[in-house]
Length: 218
Image (cartoon, rainbow, N blue to C red; front, side):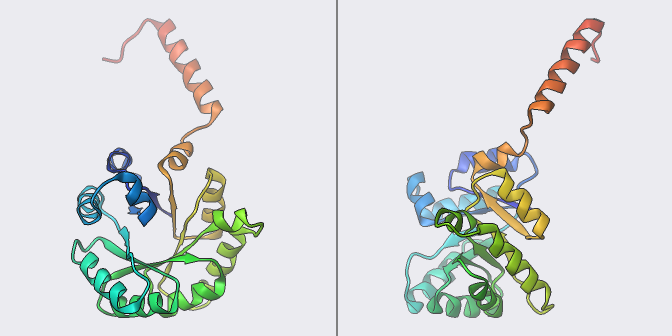
C-alpha cells in the first residue's frame, strides 16, 4: 500500500518525506487556501520534495477551462497528477489528459458506479471519500470493498483505488485489508500509525534496564 499525505503544508511534507515512508501528496483548494501560498509555486516546491505523485486540482467546472488548467498543471512536473471532479466534464478531461500520458486523479467519488466510469476514462487514481460517507450515515469502507472487487474483475482497469477522507488509523488498516492501492491521510493520522502504549511502555523499560548496566555502546 502507498501512503500519500493530504496537506499543502510544505513543512509537514518535508518532515514526513524524511521518514522514507511517504509515497506522494494530495492537495485540494481548501488545503491550498489554508497554506496561504501561491498555488502553482507551492505545487512545484512539493514536487521537488517528494518522489511520487502530487495531486493538484483544477479550479473550474467547465470542460474547456478545466482542460486548459489541467494542461498547465501537468507542465509543472511529470509528478503532477491532475485532479478533476467526477462529473461528465471532469471525466472528459480525464480521458483527454490520460490519453496524452498525464496522470489524473478523479476525486469526489461516492459510489462504485462512479468508480467504474473513472476507470473507463483512464484515471490513474480514483478517490472515494470514506469519511464523508460515514458522516451521512453510509458505510464508507463498504464502497472500498465494492470498488476493489469490481476492479479485480477487469484486467484492463489500471486505475488505483486511492482512499480519501481518512479520519483515523482504523480506516487505513481496513483499506489495506481490502486491497486498496493507496491511502491519503492528514499528517496527524499518518503519525498515529506509529503509536501504541505497549511500544512506549516496552521502550521505557528497556531504557531503564540499560541504565542499570552502567554501559555505553559508543
